[in-house]
Amino acid sequence: MQANLPYALRNKRVWVAGHRGLVGAALVRRLAAEQCEVLTVGRTECDLRRAVAVEAWMDANRPQAVFVAAARVGGIYANDSRPADFLYDNLMIAANVIEAARRTGVEKLLFLGSTCIYPRLAKQPMNENALLTGPLEPTNQWYALAKIAGIKLVQAYRRQHGCDFISAMPTNLYGPGDNFDLRSSHVLPALIAKTHDAVACGAKTVEVWGSGRPLREFLHVDDCADALVHLMKTYSSEDIVNVGSGQEISIADLAALVCRVAGFRGALVFDPSKPDGTPRKLVDVARLTALGWRPRIALEDGIAQTYRWYAEHRLSARKRHLEAV
Image (cartoon, rainbow, N blue to C red):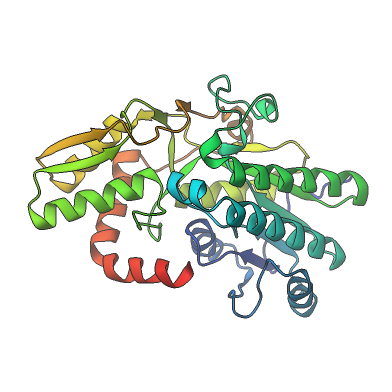
């Protein structure tokens, strides 16, 4: 395959699939600086789980570049309680968009995976070569399996059809527009929502799921969007690329940091009866760094910005999530 690098986004029709989600919305913000035409479509107009609908929309709109940011996502409880939804929906989204991209002659496609594709006990930091070298984390295996299938589709389409399709694996993301619903959110937005409520009602404690010992890596979603645009322009290979900050923090320290940002002076109460998930999750970002990209938003600054956004948009953010479920 002859890759056309650097790939120019200027004057291109660029489809952000999943534009209402956390990453998709950040990509739309980031692409505003690229002098391209950003295409979006809502679920009522085009259900990405339906192949006929996807192909018809893409045939009518003819995007030249595609970011596959659409997915059913959620935290430990959501993954564990709705395994069929997480597996089926994400399998269908990946298969339908990738195949329709081939059929309609898309020039370049970037598929977003997740670092949950790596084995539960993968050597840290997790290198891209760790994929399929061990058992997955049981609490998010359904989502992970669908993302692995998407990665393999991208690789297969490159090999068989010569498509310039690539895959990126973002670490734990956070930022404005996140899912703050406590039944389905990830750890950082859940901590922000709980702490905000505790401050608002004068509570003396904030509950944290698990022991607080697991280590996690976090990346602001605007940094992630910038990295994805960078990859679209500069990268062309079937090898996946980790997208992360390269830094980690324990859940206990993360909770304390959120409390400091929020001005909460009460106590943290850890509930060890709740699952911890993967003990440690840090990705090796050497491949991305070698391409000339590094994050710019420090964790405390990013949490402070996200906390302010949540405080201002709390009611509308929760309503938007309920409408999207």
